[in-house]
Image (cartoon, rainbow, N blue to C red; front, top):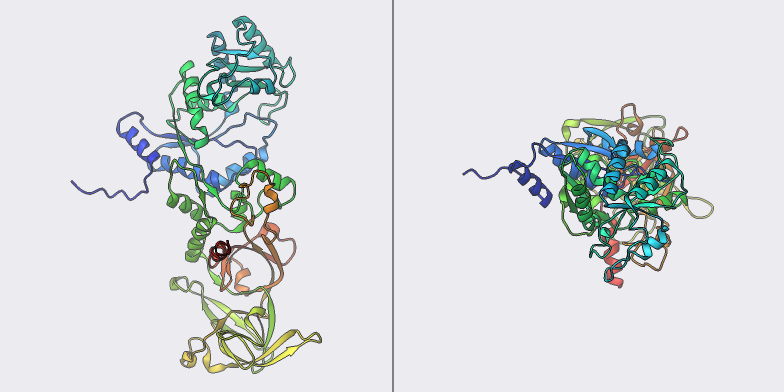
Length: 564
């Protein structure tokens, strides 16, 4: 027998799907991704997207995108459109675009069926009373005094609820299961509540809206979903999912399977808390590059390939865990290292005058677009008498092993010449304002004499040709790994005050803004940056730092741990 050549990463859900198909249980797999349009998708949703679409793609099946639009008070078309954009940006296309609201008539008819069968009733207790009488994990619940209503009375009240005769919260429709069930979700769960609010798709047609547990499984059945993949918090809901399907003439029988969520440290992943951050102006909208939303990650410069690979490499399990943000950063760092063209940018400029370079002249140098990919060719980089270098690349009284510019010292300008600092110009306050240097014309990169060695190489930008830019240095949104660890404190007190630093007077080499230039670049020695066209209001370009060249937080966390 030949050894298997299947190198696709496996997991327990993939094994279940494969076994079901091999056993002939399904002709083809059908999955669905069912977000509620009440906010923007975040990196955790990307796990579910990659899993559902990825399994269907692998096994030649179908995936529906279904909006769980059962709460008109929180949902909006703006969120729905953002979700469509995010799924497509990740690289996936759905087979059918569906809505839970597409099934409101069928869900209502099935609810009537349960009422006629004596398996659902109208409860007139208020929400607090229902909650209080539900019981605990160790104590059974109490029957509602309205549990014994007749079928005729239940049908009449439910019809009047639908017709809008009652105010919000006056009645609910509950399934009649078992108030002493060990699983609290089976203790007569609410199926419908009254919401006299217009729906963004159905308008004023409905005054009652189905709860998630009632709408979800039935929507799966109507779409002939074979494997309904949910996160672990729905594991205790699975008996209810199955009970509802057992009570109705369902056109198909989906199988619910649960998997662990994807949580990251140094952020929060709840839509409610993300909405708070947006509404309270702690961030600049849902697409703020510090947010874990897909829109924010996209604006920051994360690539779809890096996010897909991130979740593929982490795999799928049944155990919740918190993933180190550094793992996600390494995924985009690896992707951009292979794809992003190189360029030079100076963020904290100090002027250098090359005193032996002729005034008014320009020399054009050749530099690789990508040093590990010679097939991508070269870019032309201009150098003139005056250049910008990083202020941190010069020290007047440097420590030992400082291999950058210092009085009398030499460094190589990247892709150019070796220069020697001959004079330091200072202002009235004693601060260094300018350096005078001489270049060695025989040391130009690529020339026979260029093999002369110096220990330091720095980047630079021609002052005459450089383009002014604003650079936004983004960092982690919170300063602690788990902002929600202390239940007695407000998670917002852990917001990182240095999560955004704006550099208003940066300079980039002209290739970065040339016609047809990529929006993503590695600014050499600095990091990976994405052009943020949405933030540009004038002639000055704006670049967001996607990620640093190295994981600086790993060192910081190690030092913090050592301090105890």
